Image 1 (cartoon, rainbow, N blue to C red):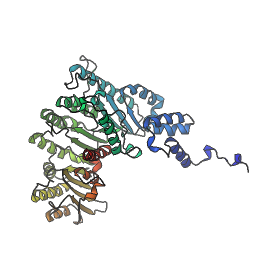
Image 2 (image 1 turned 180 degrees about the horizontal axis):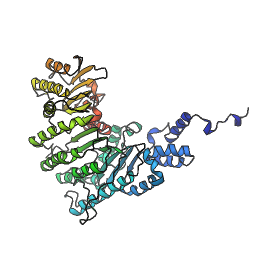
Image 3 (image 1 turned 90 degrees about the vertical axis):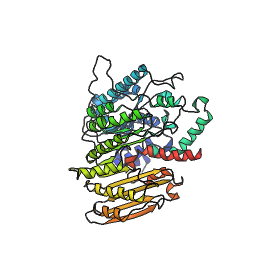
Image 4 (image 1 turned 45 degrees about the vertical axis):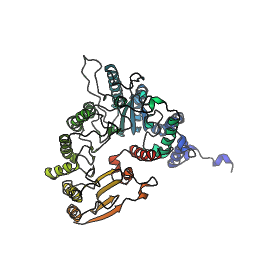
Length: 514
C-alpha cells in the first residue's frame, strides 16, 4: 500500500479532531503566552480565507473580544453590518475605549476649560452613538455581549502621575489574559523597574490640581449644537452586560449613564460598576443624589445582577470623602427596597449595613423577591467593636434573611490593616445550612444567639457552624494582610471584577517590596 492511499483528507477527519487542530493552529501550544491579541487577530484573519469552515472558526475567534477606539468604529461597522450581521453573534465582549483630548505641561495642573469639556463630550457622544447604532443591527436570534466603557486622555500618564494599567499596551484586558500571559504581578514589577529607571522630576510628586485633572469632568451626552435637542439613543438589545471598571479615573455623569440604560440597554441582564470616589465632598454628595434619582431607577427590569464597588485614592488631603449621614441613610433605605429585584446584589459602599437589613425586616417578606446571592461589607466587623454589637448585626441579618425566600448565600465581611472578618451563610438545594465564620483572631465570635436566629431561617431548624481562623498561610505565600481576604470570599465575583481583584492583591506585594 503506497502512502497516497493512506493519506486522509481534511474533510474525512471527525469534526472534533478538526476543531482541535484549528485551536492548535490559532494559539501555538509551545508559545501560548507570547501571542498578543493583535498578533492572534492578524494570524486568524489570513487563515479565515482557506475555506468556509475555517472562515467560521477564525471569525468566531477574531470577533469574540474586541477593543475599539473612535478611529476603529467605521471599519467595525463595515464588517458587521448588512450581510455581515452574523458576526455580531460572535462577539462576547466589546470594550469601547474613548480617547479624549490631550493636554500639555502648561495645563496639566489646571481644571479642564470649557472648550476641552465640550470636545470630550462630543467625542464621547459620537463614539457611543456610532457603536450603539452598529450594535442595533443585531438580528436578536442568538448571541449577546458585554459592553465595557472607559475613557482617558493619552496625556494622563505623561505628567506627574503614572499607572501601569493605564498604558496603551497594558496586556491584561480580559479575564482570560490572567491565564495566558506573564503573571500580572511580574508584569507590574518589570514595568515599575522601567519607570523608575526613566523617572523625571516632573513625576516625582502628584499634586492636588493634577489629581483633579486626572478625574476630569464626568462625560455627558450632548447634542451636536446648542440649537438641537439630544436625540434618543439607538436601542441595542444585544448588550446583556455592562462593565465599567476602575482602571481609569474618568467617569460618566450619572444622568447620562441613566439615559444609556433607559434608551439603549433595554435587555441588560447585569451591570458591574466600579469607580473612584470624588475628590470633594460636594461632588460626592451630588453623586449620591444622582445615584438614587437617576441611575437605579433607570435600570431596565431585565437586570438581575447588580455589582457596585468604589475606592478612595490618595491619602494626603484627599482621604475617603465622608458622605453626610442623612445621605447614607437615604441610600441604605433605597437600596433595601431595590434589593428584591436582583438575583445577585452587591450594593454600593455608602450603604449602612444595619439600616439596610433593618429596612428589609420592616418592609416584610418580599413578594416575588428574586435575591439569591447578597454581599454586604460592614464597618461593624472591626476589632474595636463590642461583641454585643457584632452579635446584634449578625442576628439582624438572620431576621432580614427571612424576607428573602430564595436566598442561597449571604456574606457580610470587612477588612483593614491587620484584621479580616467573614460571616457567610449558605444553603444548598437540599436545604442544608452552613454558617462559616473566619477571622484574624479570637476577639470576635459567633454567639449562640446568632446560631439560634439563623436556625429559624432554615425549614429544618438546623444549621452547621464552622469557625476557621485566618492564618499566615492563607496569604498564599504573600503574607496574610487585609487584602488577602478577597480570595476567601464566597461571593468575591460579586464584589470585584476578576482583573480588579488580582490587581488589588498585587498592590499589597508591590507596596511591601517598596
